[in-house]
Amino acid sequence: MFVVRSLVLVCALAVLAFGQTVAGDAGGAARSGQSKQVNYVQVEAAQLLQRPAAYRGRRVVLTAEVVSVNARRAALAVYDARTHALIGVSLTELSKTQRRQLIAEPVYHVTIYGLAEMQEGRLVLKAEQVMPVEMTQVVR
Image (cartoon, rainbow, N blue to C red; front, side, top):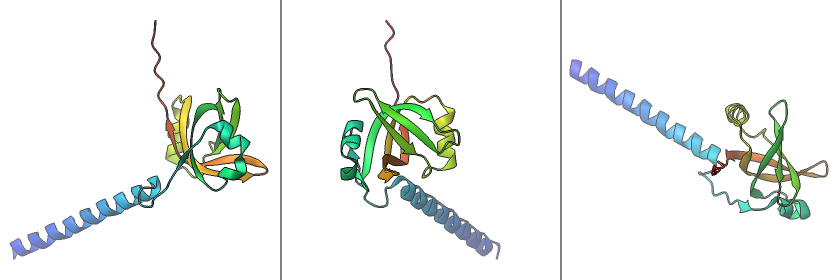
């Protein structure tokens, strides 16, 4: 009887552990966009500002410098020095932990994966993922 109980307990725990692992992986895949095919278009800031209607509703990737962060951690402004373009980025789609981590560390250069939308006549990127770009400098 002891062996049967132990076997049932081990099986029940294994099923629970496996179920948690699969649910955790599926949730992470859905948040990162891996469960569905999401095609991002690599763009430059000047392209976005010159033809905002062409990118409306499309998922884009943009690399730029962080200029300012909203006090409520809900938005940031990025600037592309080469093209002198300033673009607003909404962080409302990111989790609170991701926003806090992005703002807590001194990040100056980021790559933004997000949806391009028009709000009040201005182009705004709704960030789905923001990744810091590490800049290495050679000391001479």
